[in-house]
Amino acid sequence: MNRFLKACRREAVDRPPVWVMRQAGRYLPEYREVRRKAGDFLAMCRDPEVAAEVTLQPVRRFGLDAAIVFSDILTPLVPMGAELSFGPAPHISNPVRTPDDLERLRLPQPWSGTEFLSETLARVRAELDPETALIGFCGAPWTLASYLVEGATSRSFTKVKHFAHHYPNDFDRLLEMLADAMAAYLRTEVEHGAQAVQVFDSWVGTLGAEDARRWALRPARRLLQSIADLGVPRIYFANGGTHLLGDLGEMPCEVIGLDWRADLATAARSLPQHAIQGNLDPGVLMGPDEEIRRRTLAMLDQAPNPGYIANLGHGITPDVPVHAMKTFVSTVQGYRYE
Ligand code: CP3
Image (cartoon, rainbow, N blue to C red; front, side, top):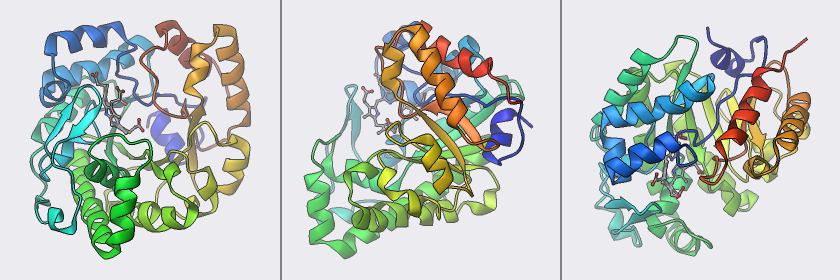
């Protein structure tokens, strides 16, 4: 079994596996080339040949331990009724602002409307080395609800909080519907070749502990629990969730993804039942190679073993030099457990 899947299950490995959130993206010249020809980001996601190619680009260049299928957390909202576009920032032109707006949302059952992703997964799996794992993903209910209500990435999240506070029962219904939809979506991904799944809760950090428990962790638990029978490792990435470490220890998943604000050693002690993924500040990749190496080694020395997957603490940014990514990845690849 490959190193990434073993580490997810907290089994012994020779060195930490490594992959990077947003590894297929604009910091890569070969991605920019494909992107320029394709024109539209959503069109790229919907073309399995193009999506498979960009999924494989970083794996070829860096020899990563896992590929993450190319798509976006928001694409499955389209079959649910969202009018979505990217410029490249996402925009939803028919946001959910009142309980009545919920009536236009659909939960395709069985899941349908993202068949392009199934084909991309099958194509990538056919080309990948058995030693490289294929990760599927989705957005967590709170993060997706934020986009559905705000209609875009927000600074303040006031529209979604307005909805949640004024219509608490309807908001719970929305979160449950998203949990059930994403469970069906992930199930489809696994049926088509995903060997692990990551649930991105990018906006947990906008909520205080009490609200996070109700609006983020509870529906995420429902989602993670309902795919337990698939038997693939489940990663919950709780961006900005350092104030919730005690609660994260109870999430029904194999791996907790940490952002760079978390102290790795402290977090690992709070999460003895989980493997840990993360958490180098993506901003470190803007520094000199020597500093990248030093900070990466310091992170690896603090990380738990077994049960650790090296990654950044959030997505790699488009302005990171390719050699900086190479330095990060090869530092992990050169590390050995005693
Ligand atoms: O390589 C990979 O990680 C797989 C592909 C992937 C993308 N988005 C491609 C993408 C993944 C896993 C995502 C997840 C995603 N999308 C998240 C969760 C992770 C996080 O960052 O917290 C979120 C919040 C989104 C929503 C989203 N999509 C935003 C805010 C943006 C625009 C911001 C930006 O980077 O400009 C996107 C667009 C997007 N998704 C791009 C890519 C490569 C850039 C579009 C382009 O190439 O024009």
